Image (tube, rainbow, N blue to C red; front, side, top):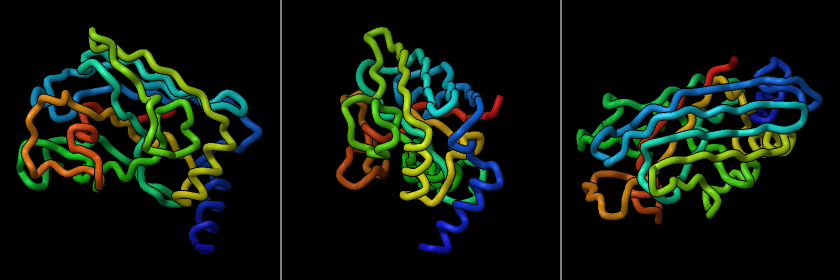
Amino acid sequence: MKHLHALAAGAFAAGLALPAAAQEATYTGTIDPVNGAETRQNPIGDVRVTRDGGTYTISLTVDGLSPGMHLAHIHGFPEGDPQEATCAGPATDANGDDFVDLIETRDVSGVTMIPLTDDPASLSLHSETYPTASEAGEVRFETTVEASALEEALDAEFSTPPALERRVVYIHGVPEDLPLPDSVRSLEGVPARVTLPVACAELEAQ
């Protein structure tokens, strides 16, 4: 564990995360569908993460989602010098069931890290404040988080800096009445329809 924290400290020093004092930075990504028409959705839009002094602001603008709450997270690799995460595509469907499930994204996208909720620094997956799509399928979501709190949480939980230019954003969730094969996997105790990826964006520094 000490070795992992040493790696993380070195990564911060190398500039993978902005120092707490700092600067301004913007990261953006284009939201594209994952799993296509099988989800009865065609999400398009964009995500923006800005660092302004001591605060991160995360904004999500999406059309084409099914109405209701959708889990949304920043995913990535939990490393001191993280490899670049990418969005999963059809080739990631390891079991050939025509769905790319959450577990199958891990090889290319890493693990679930930062929730897009009213408390991103909690790193908690359980929340009722995820983005909610209107009856027209629109999401207009924004949340803020203290930069130092988020950076400390990521270091403590994953031994990694934010390194947002190496992360991706996933939106999850399909309608309750959409049938999914038993082969679609999820987190333990969470229905596959809740975690099935429906959209993804790769963040890039601007």
